[in-house]
Length: 443
Image (cartoon, rainbow, N blue to C red; front, side):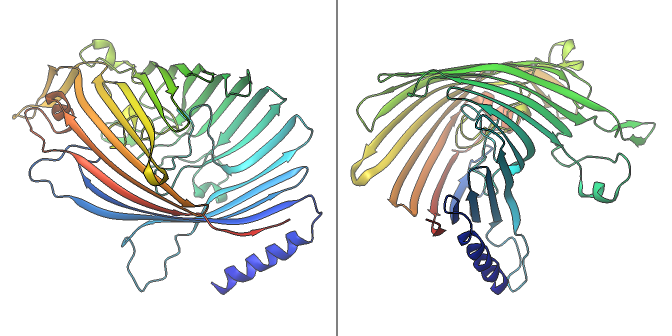
């Protein structure tokens, strides 16, 4: 701890000596969230016991900016209370963000390092703020911009830590969730006005090491074969004093890690109507395409859309039944409505309703004999309702509480528990304390 204080003191003294235009701040975030789970992520049965857990995230954020150079360093410790034995030296401190941005001209700059990426409504790239550990990406960006138009070109190339001492190509297999080996994308955005109206196009290519396969009882690793997925599509937002319209469409093509052809799509539409300063209502529809496993073509082609590096939590209900969209092979549709209003004592309340349904209606079950059985089910999965209450105590402290419940259909029970298994009432609650002190700011 003394070393940390010494480092911070030296940093402050160094930045105090720079030119008067430069800005330097030291901030922190301390977020603690308690959760009560009995139906979070999957349905409970009458034998399911509730889970009480507490997650904590602590970040130290150093931000520097002058005319040409901008840097950010965010150190993070993310943990579940009790995950490490007490009276032991825990060294889980890691790097959440660490990047440098250099502005060569007024219109062109580069940003390199570990960074948070959020584009458009956060559908395909997001910060993953709900997760205790968040989400950041190691990448290099080239950024072109003028008053109304921006173009970002992003590149990334990944390896395991073993590559540091390797001379040639090595295996890149992160389990249980394989990660991209490389990606490249271009994002074009044009702003129409100062109300937030804009139009974007995102095109991304991400490559994955081909999945291992068993041949004659032996595991074959294809370290030199990269299968590429391509995602491209537009996003548009039109905002006026009276309403906001948003729409998006993305098409996915390419080849999966398992050598399946990819042909999937996503589309969405949302309208938000504000009435008064502190009230609004929204209505929308999201469609994530799925694969018809009853079709012989599903053996060679997948139609299941992946939301890439975006959050399911933000869009598909806070109970996270579909947080990883591509895990649900059948695809998912979400007809949703949202009401936002201000309660007494400056408490903001948001009520969200989600009506879930399958895109494709065939599910695969195991019979009592252990054989695979294909069955057609009703596409309707059920209704989820989420309540969120937030209160900003002051500039350094925000309190957030939430309660969610789900009314599942037999199809949802079959999807999550198996054919013929009945669920108990699923619900979920949480309470979050977020403190954001600012320790130092240069003048």
